[in-house]
Amino acid sequence: MVKAPKSLLRLVGRSLHEYRMIRDGDRILLGVSGGKDSLSLFHVLQHFQRHAPINFSLAVATVNPQVAGFDPSPLKAYFAAQNTPYHFINQALVEQANQSMQGDSFCSFCSRMKRGVLYR
Image 1 (cartoon, rainbow, N blue to C red):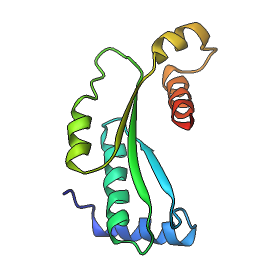
Image 2 (cartoon, helix red, strand yellow):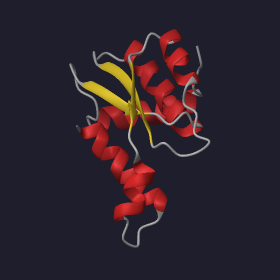
Image 3 (cartoon, one colour):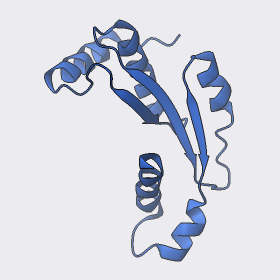
Image 4 (cartoon, rainbow, N blue to C red):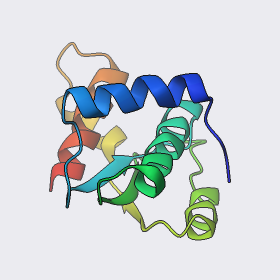
């Protein structure tokens, strides 16, 4: 199990409590790319799922934008080992971007589209 630094856990714990970001019974679906930011957030949330006085469920999802070189396949085994539900969604975002982007950067467009997929 990966351990987050105590200083980070303290700050996040304070914010979770102060702003009531997670409440008892919440179901959280975390978008995970496999990068260090999303995996770090996963481990922080996993820590609070185990140690916080509130009960919430945590699942993760990866939206595969079908970009050359993007290989999220190792995530399936990783989250299985963490006993965390994992959802993998293929979405041809590159094709959509080529058809409908209007002045946005590709990253900005893809980010909004991935969020929309997760909302469904």
